[in-house]
Image: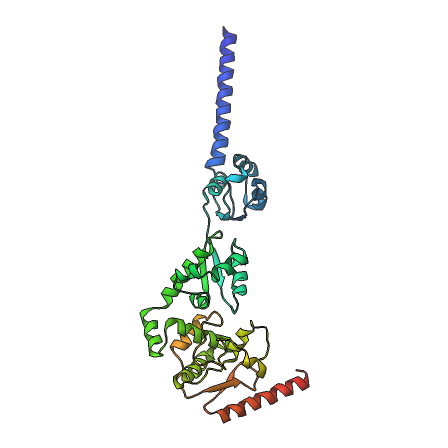
Length: 341
């Protein structure tokens, strides 16, 4: 009898120990913090569970066995592609739950710098999101899609306000366009619409002029002066005769606009056609947009690069004055070429 009681006691103790072990393991996997630092994960389509585990640095996990154990219950097909962040202090079980539910963390989509071609925009977006360049270009040329935002493939550059946007890594191009439209609407406040009206321009026309201003110079302090030149020409009915519009006709493949380039038959050639081209020739930034809305008031009708070769320009009221400035610049350019500087 005593032997039987002893066996029962040992069995009971064993059950308690086993239950404690199971309970401790459950607590360790589900409640106890396992991440000592932040893990930043990008889960691509077709990625395996083992590949995701390898992408998590050992340095931010205090109990790798616990993490492997909970991940063993996750199949490859259950994981949703995306960008995920596991914060410090999270338990192991958070990872498979996060991947099953698709609890993504947004990424920053930066659209900045010179954007003169749709291919450039496509590369910028595809490098920062799970989206190929072809999909981006297709959306930027999709008449039906863009019509829903009030734009066309010809004026879609107007829709893009350079900035940093929070998006999900797996977002579609439509999601990106939604963000861009919201930023566009936010820029065109009642005050900016009023300023555009003072210049006799619609918002899209402001974007066209601003794109020419931006393409003319990298020196922002001169933007209001350059904008003033083109607005003066428009008011007088002069052709804009903007070299960047001609460069646009050639896909920006020419380094210098020559006389024969000026004869290209294109509605964007402002040497041949009066008024504004059909759309922006690049993505205008806020500085160039604001320059058109708040141009310098002057009588200048011409400008050319300064002989100082410092990225600035010399402005002129008359053509004869402009020609003198142009000759001065050409002499400085020739001198630099001959001196090898």
